[in-house]
Image (tube, rainbow, N blue to C red; front, side):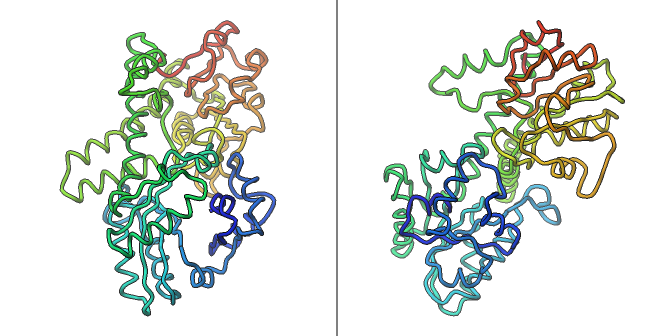
Length: 437
């Protein structure tokens, strides 16, 4: 919404939320999320044609286009628990729109949702409206955290799905005209509603599949003496495969990949396609295996015991250049090490201490074995091992010679992102290993 306001100064954009503290943060000098370049975009448009407000119903009533951007977490209860998307917030928004709308509205699904969700929204609107007309569009977001601003400035494509009716086509063209302020028309793809809804889940599933595939091969590389980076480079030169998303790691995280694959798997099962469901579920199983394999390797290498040993975990966000920790591999790894009675010290340049403790232990819980350091050097003091779990650039250029001197000997490095020069670390004296090496 900030980018639309920034690129289309003639359009008034109002972001609404019932959470007053969150809206206050968006109106402050310290935004509630970290994303490179976002501060500038918000500050240039805020107060001009970008507004943040808690006046939910009033804003809905006045709007021509409503972007629904609420959370769609995985259900934790009942039918589909652990796999299906929880659509309670989508339904709540639809009911609120129906309650206050008195003029025609274009409703745009921005949340990642299961295919056919638009049908649910349409039914709720039709049953509760006082005569206003609605068109429901699907406009999934393909930006990546850490590069979101650039992804929005220069997107690979913008996808808009709508009903193939005269009214649906008109609504689609209305939304196309918004993006066309800065996106070349040939990059704006229009489809039917169901193709658009499904495309988001499939895009994330394919990206995650690539990561799980190369991570599966990384295990074979370690068993055979091959180098996963050399294998990835060789196969990536094939134009049919390409080089992207072939970087072996400790596993994927973030708010979308696992949630969307599980949702896709559940959908396939719901539509009577158990073999297809099992195929996609295996992508998540491989990702879980990769995280467990990494923590097991730490224990095994440290002479089959990390009890009372200090392990420094460098990085907690699920990827660099974001403070997002949702489904971060670090959470599982830290928990595994705590189960093994290790003393774990975490350092991340952007994730606050309270978030780290809550993610690992649960809100309000403490564990004397888990602490948070103010720097990588502080985390490493007296440590038996370093585990690099997030690919922050600063971890590539740390003074590892000084770190080595401050650690217990033998000193180990486990590079879960393959970002450091293992040969140089070994020359310093570290016993260093990477993924698929």
